[in-house]
Length: 573
Image (tube, rainbow, N blue to C red; front, side, top):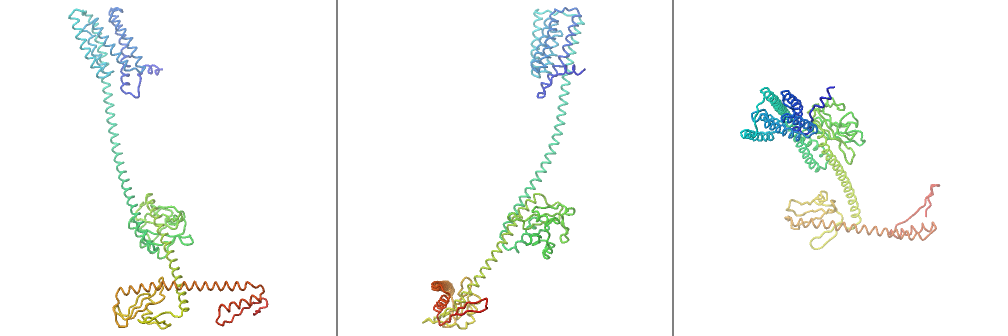
């Protein structure tokens, strides 16, 4: 039942305007207190024998009505308007009371003080100052009016004056209590705000310290990441220049361990059957022992390397003592953290890069990204080394095949030519028969290098005639006057002549070989045309042996036979 009166008497609240809420609160209290007080004051005056139609009582009655309007406006939210109406009404009422009754010495003029307090409480400082100034001016006006006889001060009964001042003191006390309470509330709010600010500042300071620590950690992490990426770039440039797989893999493990400070670095490659990961290189002593005994791990989840190579995913063991997939290795007893990342080429896993540390929790997700980037570079370098090795092997094989072919062709060619060399004695050129070669000439043929008899001062010099790395002959130059100092220009001239002679001889051999093939093809064509003219077997057989005899010549005897396979006999023509 008490909720309805409380709700009716409660002042309005404005959540977005604290000053307006406070003014509405004071107006509400003052109006609710002033209206009953003024009613009692009016009743008190009437009980003193004053008539209701007296001007002072009419002013009090009008004041009660105006305060009711102020209370209504305050409830409707027109707080500022209600405040000005309230202050102006009370000031005018005080002035009228002073003019009609007590004068400057009575309660009407003293009530200006109460009005000033009320203005400061509800409207603020400057309205209160304005009320004070107007009240002072009004006081001098009242004094002038009394001196001039415009108004006549008629002292009332002493008890009446006491009652009027009692009501004024009550209102003044009320306003002072409200003012003091407002100041206390403001001070309390300020203190609470100060404490709140202190707590907030403390929290902000702690947050700032935490953020600074995080920023430092993040900065350190970024610097470490940048250093790692720079190291990866440097390693990539270094390993890109290595084309031999036997040199590349050990250098990769050594450089990775040195640059990143790892206890052990190993490279595993899949075997031909794609069933096991075989350790190919390691930097630690234990890893080298494992490599020497061809340590290998199956592609399953029983080891970190096996897990990585079988699934193609990086794996970290931060505490190898409790990690379920860690394989306890006596060759690496100091390992406390391990990480492995796959080596991929064109999406295909070819092995794994395994790194181990003596520190617990040594690896993070950022390390996985960095090592994965490095692993991609290593995998590319491995594949390039493999391709380079295959290309080198293919080149060596093709060169060997070509050398054998060239050697065989020139061997056949030298057997077919009539003379294998010529000699110029200063006057004429004479052919040379195949004869035993001197030791110096044989040395030039075997080594493929220029041979002097005794240093630069010698009677003869032998220069190999080389074609695509193969020695096909030798150029001998001898001095008829004994020892001679062969100049660099002379030797260069002889070497150039030997080189040009080799090219010319090869061109001549190729031309002659082409001519022989052309003649052979032409002879085969003629024979085919000749035997194609006949249709009987006997005629064809006779024409065949006849044409072959003509083409081969030299009195060769030609015979062709048909075999009877069923009777194991041969028919001879």
